[in-house]
Length: 519
Image (cartoon, rainbow, N blue to C red; front, side, top):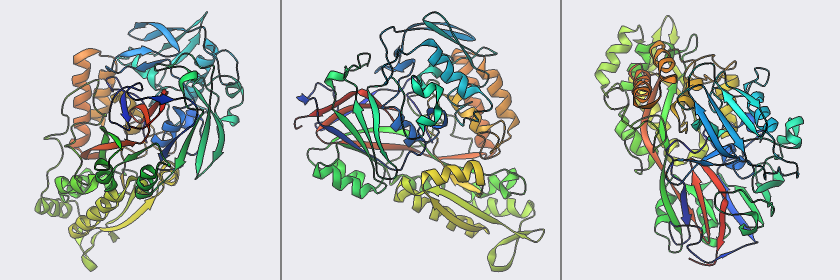
């Protein structure tokens, strides 16, 4: 699930010769830049782009009002300047920007994009995540103003995460299911779901942070490659110019000559308990007991293949609000305490070693994405074994990303889910961690933590260090009640061959694409 360059996210560059700028090696225009994505992105309408792979794809064709610079600061995007107030920010738009169909990008396009997401009839899963709840947009003469009902500390930063739809796609959103209508340097020319997505360059593009359309490859192909070993083979052979590695093939890429590499944090390996009616996880005592039954240090090493770091918070590093919200707040590993807690909660040992309460077996359906590499599969098996030892019956359910989204938000057929959520502002998590439960809202786990909600309400209107302290306390409140359990801080390897580009928070800076002549 993921999105966007965060408040202090560094723009990252990988080249065939290592990190540097797109000019670090001789480059050539024309040609095709090919990158592997681990799953099909599904529907391409930015208003529904909740999966990280979807937003990776969208970043090639769409611009945002502002961007994160290489030093983590805010730099111009579609807006050339802005004026920030506690509850509003007014952007002055560039006058030279055009949409992929040749029409000018207008303040009405920007306002329409945001108001469409905020419209209850849209039922956008990114409302409350990338567009803050209650935000409204108003078009002016060359300007657009975003406002919130109450002061909001991240009102400027949130604008980095909203892809602006323009041109024909504003009036006919059906065009966006398998097409693009944005102001980015590329436009989708072919969609072959499950196989590849091809984008053609816009040579008239002149407002990028790293170059113009004249500098870029003629086309970009995003090839769906769910298997990392296959991606590694294609990269070494030169069929791919870039891919991301989380599993065992990462070590192979790190030792292969001619492969550029950069390691970057990509959020947590973590899991949630479903707290809906009649679910075992609705009882906080059960959640804490099941957490105590797991050795999280061992689990983190398994899930990350030994490449992870201790989890210190929910927001991807580097953060707008630094600090460690995890240590000392997650129930510690203690098998005896776990067993005693389950006994006290009324779950008594029953036939076949499975605990029973009121004639009902302690049964858990553990959901996870199969595209996250063998480490996550092994982590799921480890969790199942530990919970079985504690007296639970566990059914593993590994699915593709698109099916995962359906299971979380529609069918709700799970009791625990391994789910990284990669965001760069703590405010972007609120819709997932509180508020209306799925399918009416984005709160897929049916969380209802009063302490978290109280702290978030206060933090939303408190800027600076005081606000950050409140956001940190809110995260810790979730861990203390085992609403979700951060296990490991994941890192990923972005490997390249004969190419250079920047990525931040899983999104491309497509104006930085370069094909290099060797490394």
